[in-house]
Length: 115
Length: 115
Image (cartoon, rainbow over all chains, first blue to last red):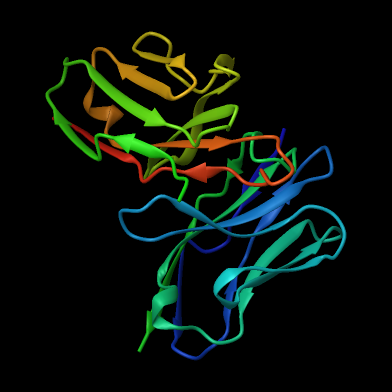
C-alpha cells in the first residue's frame, strides 16, 4: 500500500520569498512521485514528477522537487514566490510511470502569497 | 488541444434524486479514473476503468454509486439515491500507455451539491 503525508495544510509566504512545501511518502515498491497544482474551480495540473534517474526534478513555473529515498521525501520548492503561485498543491504517489495507473494523493497544502 | 471534458460543471439536486455525471476522456487514452474531492477526505479514488473494463471500484459505495463506460468516448458516474454527504467535487481523469502518455490528465470537475 502507498500513502502520502503533506505537512502543513496551509503555508503563507511573502512574494519573492522561498516556497517550501513538504511531502513524505510510504511505498512498498519503488515510487513514482508527483506534484499537482489546483487553482480555484479548476482541475489538477501536473507540476512535475519523479520517475527514475536524476533525483532533482524541475517542473513548470519555476518549481522543482528533490527525491530523497533515505528520508522518503519529495519536497517542492521555488526560490522566489509569485502572486500567481497561490493555489492548492497536492503530492501524489503511483506504482507506475505511465498516466494509466492510479494515484494516491496527500491531503494538500494551500499556498497563500503575501504581497 | 486535447482535454478531458466533464459535464455538468455544477449540479444542485435534492436528496433522493438520481445524479449522473459524464466524462469524455482524451482520445486514445485507455484508462479513465473517477476521483472525489471533499474537505474532510481530500482526493480519493472511487473507481477506474482500463479498456472500458472496471479495474478497481473498491473506493465507491456500491449501494448507491455506479460507474460505467458505455463506449471509449464516454464514462459515467451515477448516484442513486443521492444524499447530502455525497456533496463534493468529482473529477474524471484519463491516461494511456503510449510513449508520450506519462501523466494522467484531469477534467475540471463536477461540483455536486445535494440539499
